[in-house]
Length: 396
Image (tube, rainbow, N blue to C red; front, side, top):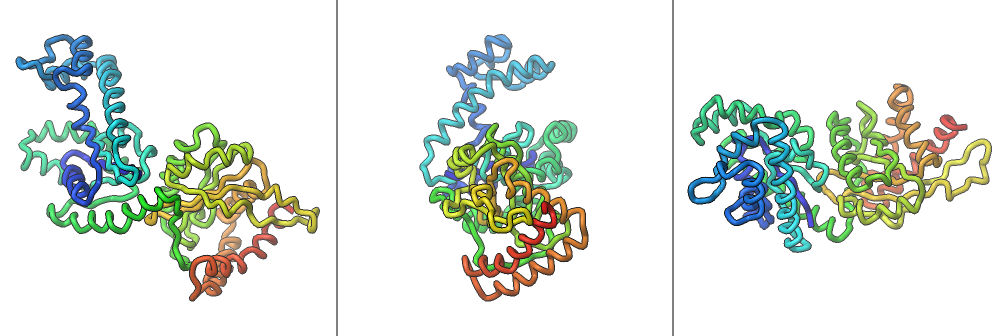
């Protein structure tokens, strides 16, 4: 099951995108509808609200008078906290029930207006943000929904900013044009990313490119890495000592393959193995055939390298739209230390970056015309002897 978080500011057209996804086959879990359902007449939620805020929050027909509740519940922080303590657990429980009822191969889209405000982005396999400038949203609320301008501005100001939403967005859906403009974008997203992602997640299949190709440095790489790291922290919990962005994409202005490398540091290999299922569910299936790095000799032990010290576990992203490698290494081992020191060396030394880029270009040339494992092997055959020499320069 693939879990997608969908959000956007008021007036962005999030509901329109949700309907388009539903038409493609997505299971929509609408948090606004759930929030109303759990306080409908006859529910324990409504009874708890009456106990907390009095019968004055009820309409004549016994349903919840939402403006009356708002007047009391948002009067101060304590009242707001009391409201949340009643409704949030109920919404969470009902959300869990709906997700559990979905088919194993479902693409579940959780429509959550306050996804950013409530810190829910790392719980999702992917986050979609319907992106429309605040002034455009204001115009839509006033002109098409009849909301008073002052009220519309107050509501927009109370929500996350555009920048805060964009920071958690794996996919930005520009809906600032005509309503029909976004339909093609949503259709392509479904066919080219969401459906393959769900299949890969369900079958524990990493997403991989066949060719080796360097691209110009992307200033968004680090932000993308931080979003993945947030998901990895949720999956790992206290089993991870640290999680770092490593490799070429962690070095500003260095051309690289468009694959983000991340390193999870754990106490021992048992902890690494214990993360296998959680990382898989988070969207990072294991590659069981990869169990160690290429051991690097030092002047002190040119022939007697302890290969066990180079053991690791290796996972890759199932998302075809954001390839990533996740190396799970034991704290203090040579591979774990080398990944960090090598990154920091490249960041600090322009000559080292130039030397490495020249080598990467040579590897890319050797891999040209090849695909899959053959391309990767050809690329690494060029790089590994240099890595051995660099290891001795950094640690010898």
